[in-house]
Length: 154
Image 1 (cartoon, rainbow, N blue to C red):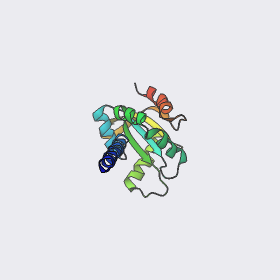
Image 2 (image 1 turned 60 degrees about the horizontal axis):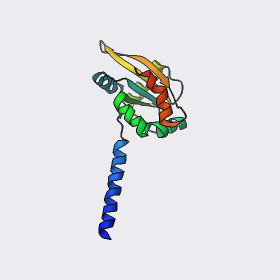
Image 3 (image 1 turned 90 degrees about the vertical axis):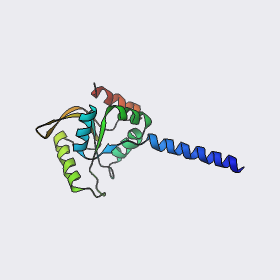
Image 4 (image 1 turned 30 degrees about the vertical axis):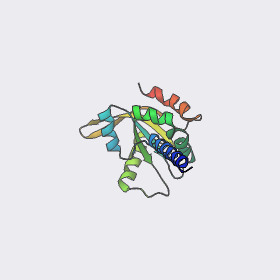
């Protein structure tokens, strides 16, 4: 009986480990780091403008799309992820707050969630963005959301 219980526990542990491993994405919060990685990997940046601790549609987008295996697989191959958060309750570093406000103005973001795909070029130390497309929440889960976003990337 102890052997069977041990085997079941090992399988449960391995299953839990494999599930947490596959749902891990690297969401950057520093735009300069995202631009450098984007240029190094030759991938566009997915900029996610969110109100993580108050915006219901943002939370819904994260749960229905950004945590799903289909999105995780696509994102890891095709984009650099940049989260630009505008929390109300969570304390945020002043540098990140100013960066996010600046990029909100650059992209003309008026509501949340807003997602842009963009390329970034650095000329004389200044970053310029070229928007490839924009969306927000799309009903229907990861597949429906990806159907909107995939055409933005050639």
